[in-house]
Image (tube, rainbow, N blue to C red):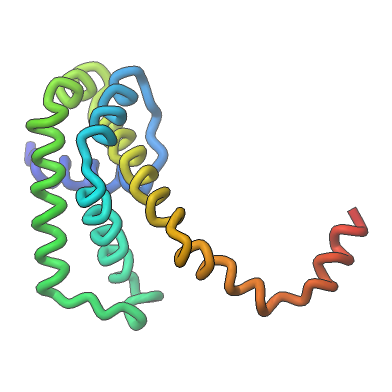
Length: 148
């Protein structure tokens, strides 16, 4: 069995999916979050953004270069390796033994959520997300609310 492709897929899927969490996945999640620095979380956010920007629907509005992608892929590989085989080795072993690969998916899902919370809580990002409201017709929403 090829471990590397399965592991890579499972970890990536954990960033995007909602896996079942057991006690060992919870332990791993706590360790992953606790062992990552703010720099690690920033690298994770940048990697997710750059990876998602490859989708054809948004690739035309991204200017991430191949060299930047390669550097981010390397940085994330080193982060995942450090977390799973070093900082959180015991929790990773227990999670795999008792709950399987889905526990690792859950762990990285939680880590991704924590990292994204930091991104979304930035005042510039919050303001950017609310900007579209400048184009809404408030009277239509007032009517909608009055009807309910």
